[in-house]
Length: 408
Ligand code: XIL
Image 1 (cartoon, rainbow, N blue to C red):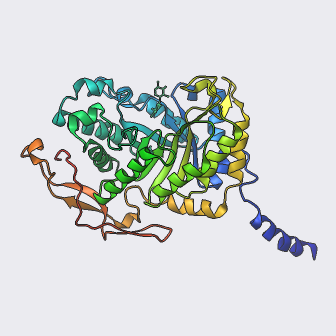
Image 2 (image 1 turned 90 degrees about the vertical axis):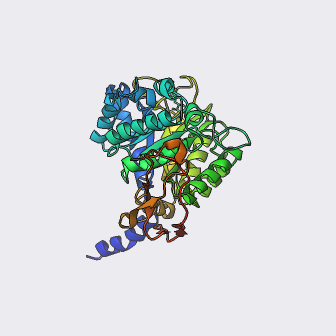
């Protein structure tokens, strides 16, 4: 009789005080415990390989198409859509209870079908909208995070937008328009991101992205998250990346590490990168750009991913570093991350508070013609946003987005 209550008495605080994910056997279970999405870039062919698929579904809870949902993969020629590879990857994900990122709508690369027809503002906006309406419409209930914008920021110290064909044809509000168009079709089904490279730590480019994100928020252009591609080279500076993640958290934004590879990595580099993510509640997804070095776009001898070898795939000691970092995750931050990730996309607040806000006619009426009319933009109805961490953020309803989008 006596030993039993004693056992309960002693064991409760013991278990409660133990890092609760320490028994996790896979990256996936350890990441789940930390409230984190952990994923890989993949394709519709690889997920049909039994050994590859076994590792992918056991160790990861998220996938993204490395190429198959890009513009020219989903729409080529213009007006002809192909969703099959994306659907195949989604079916794999869904069958294994995994989430999916969508990559991407707007990019200067892998968009030759769009480049062939986009010559001016009007056909640029209509091509953009038709693509987002179609691809976004097809996948909208299947995708958690959308890279609406990919690599749009200038390199170097000047900030601003890169001169890609979308920008040249439409004007510098093309990015705002793409976000508004995306929110309109995707609604609150998915989080809208701008994703970029070379802006993982604090530098002029990432500082320009902070300014751009603030401008979007002030103008009520829908933005939910920032993607840090994290194509890195050893050594990785944990503090630098962590500080950068935090400054987007201070704006209420998610950060996802979207395309991680670390060239010639040491385990310490992976410890640093996962550590930088885990110490910020707003770092919500950690995605490597391929499962194995054998799949990497920068070459099979890059030493840049968590596995190497073809089939079956072999764990590297980078894997162990990531596992150890996950097991050491701070439960308090994990709890905050879990609270943060239930904020509905597009609202930064409870779904009930989400309402439409009608903005006046686009400011460049002349460019759009007389058919221009008001369009709805998502906004928290009261103008006051309270996130689960109790932070209050006020958006003045009098400020309107200075974006031109096609009339509905
Ligand atoms: C790369 C793919 O990995 C390659 O297979 C393809 O040939 C080119 O694109 N930034 C991005 C990704 O946003 O889409 C790129 O993916 C890598 C750089």
